[in-house]
Length: 160
Image (cartoon, rainbow, N blue to C red; front, top):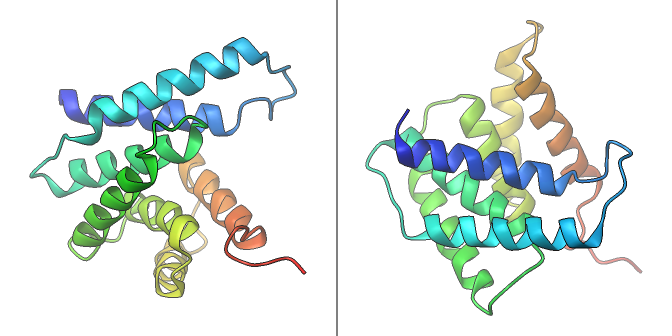
């Protein structure tokens, strides 16, 4: 497997683990939580300047960076700018990316950042194509992520 792709997939996995830390009922220890956050930010920053000419590899890289920056609590003051740069890269590749699980994942996490209704419509259109076939664990996971984002739109919506 390509080194850049393997690093991007590793970052996606680490970000997912941090986002769902403790959801399995295991206790969360502050030193572990802080260490994982720091490691995730370092991994994200180390991949930030990387780019790929392969559209799917670039999509995986952008997804990893967006997930990584969203999962970590740390910020050296430039995380917002880096997330915006990643979002700009995502907008440049979305139209070129074929309908796939990868595109659904990229659209879902981007929608969770910008709440662009056209992205939500694209996600649902692709998911509809999945039909009644047996869904993979990855498809089930992203459906749950999207459901969570749709049901909990904070900070996009204000609470009175």
